[in-house]
Image (tube, rainbow, N blue to C red; front, top):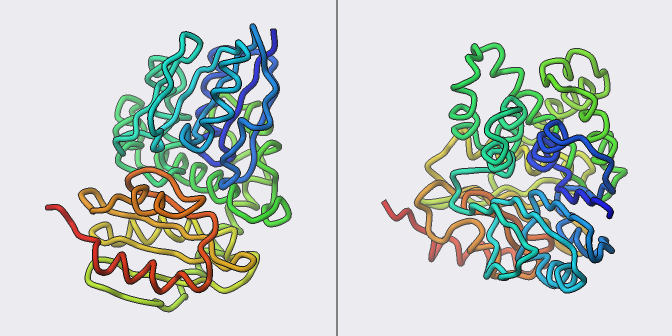
Length: 320
């Protein structure tokens, strides 16, 4: 029997798996990648009797590979909060999926474990741009303002490190960052003890300061759109920048375009009650998906940007 842990390389994926392995330590085959490396199940060759844990990657984007694993006799446990599409019915598939927008994968694992390592769930929620979820989870910890600030700093730093077009864009590959984090039961020790995490945090702040100077590309009644320059730092900070825009102006939608090859990577953030939701909007395009409040498109053609923004301006609205 072999165990596989397949997880998104962002804060939510790392913290979700870390909770599982703190509760149930075992040697597993680790499969991860950068934030937009979604189709991770294609790399898994599990078969009869093997166990595959999947954390924080879209079932809809991994459907064919999931069905292949189930047909080969693997047991799959699936934790996620992205749009799943129809969920296969199979005796070997166990799912804990909540795409309502009120949870992240770290919170779902926290629920599964009965809160045994809740501080890490708080880190994951902060990193995933869900401060209300983080605060709800943290209420039982008795953490003061300073402690919450540290958990938030760690979460946002882990999340920032997952963005980039290639491993060369980030300071530490997500797999190495997970292995570093895995040696800590207490998240408060990480920022204090790991110099590399401190360097990632410092660079995140520098990149975000640069992004916040970006002029608005287009401002409409219900959204603002920004286009970052074609620079390595832009690819690193795009998600962090989009999360910051959503937190600073939570009543509007936000679009961040980042040049990549012959097109753009698109990050979308939508407030609660926005129609269409972020994932509904992005799933209309190849390589698009996410969750209700935060989604993206892997590659939008350069000549498709104006039509994308026009459609959002004409059809987007708040339902309340």
